[in-house]
Image 1 (cartoon, rainbow, N blue to C red):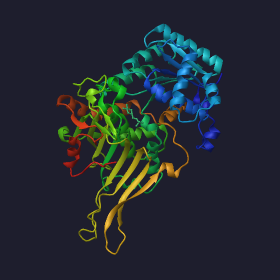
Image 2 (cartoon, helix red, strand yellow):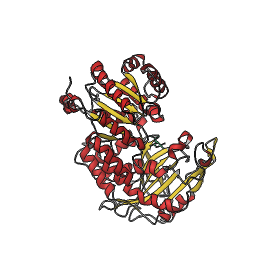
Image 3 (cartoon, rainbow, N blue to C red):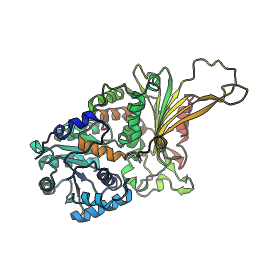
Image 4 (cartoon, rainbow, N blue to C red):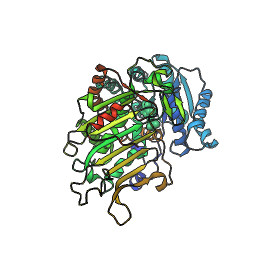
Length: 513
Ligand code: BG6
């Protein structure tokens, strides 16, 4: 039997000598709760295949689907195969599939019945014997948050939560993690009453994106950028996550949640934390998380919210050449709902580095195009030794970290227009991942599932980070709940006019990415 201590199956020589070598998970299995849901079908199951295809899963790796369907192992394997063939990043290879399929199992059950969890416990023990998973299990909760408590308690009752000497047990939790600070605290208490915080992996899939991790490389591996990241040089920061898709089949999930809870509370505040935090002593999880927490603790929303925030709901319009329906016509959406599909808000960070620099965060569905970026807009130079008019066409210098698509980094600055006169105009210097590197970026879920199996927690927000993020957002949500309803914006545009007003009154404007 292999040791339950992950440090012992790690090869210290490999770790110490070459950190660039791929990290392969040790003996382990993954149980997915909510395996028939959209996320599992579109992201999790293909990610498992992609990891297998890259040779990053251990020989006896086992995948257990848990759900209410009356499926046999073979029927479940067929479902996995269909999602993989539809969505996996790596090409289909029979030999990879055949090896993976040997370790695919299904357990039928709901989230409350003792006998179903007892059956799961028996199944995992059987797999331990059969496939050498060594009692090491990660439980992926891809279920609505109202079931977190039931599942955690059942895992505890059935002896699945604690492997004792028989292996490690970890829980991986999908968002939404609460709907305000109080509910997040309650959920954390429930989860932490069963699993110690070191065994809890909360997913924010943006942290699994290569370009998001590149924020750390850009800032802390170079001398060129980070010295300018402060209030002496930066006028303001815009963090945008725009989507062109509408709610489609997700209306049921989304109604009552909205853009701020769905995206600002997690993805965008995490991006803010990575851009604004101080240099960690090392990149080990505790140091990184504590720097992020520090900056989140110093972050607060700026009021008055009637002027410094904006929210909207999309109406019908054109998305490129496609005519699309408005939110109120989406199937399953309550037409009277005040749930926003666009949210923008202003934040400040009370620190020596950032005092007085507004961070404008915005996100929305059915906007002009799909793009996520962080734009640091510089102040004007304190003095311009040019004649009036020579620099009239020049805007502020901007550094843009393009998270997706066209991943890269763009610098916008003034340059002389060729000719005998002195005229300065803005130009772009553009680094693109796809041109600079031949390697393809792994999908965020590949990285995060592998990290959870490896006990590598750097890219997972802690309970404190999640609670702080709700603390930052709650005052805005309270204000919105008590003040009218969202403004309309036609699909395919860049949000409601109130969002433009929000910046215009400060003498600024949104970037058109
Ligand atoms: C999810 C949100 O977290 O992120 C979705 O719940 C959103 O509403 C999705 O569509 C976007 O992710 P990505 O990786 O496509 O930018």
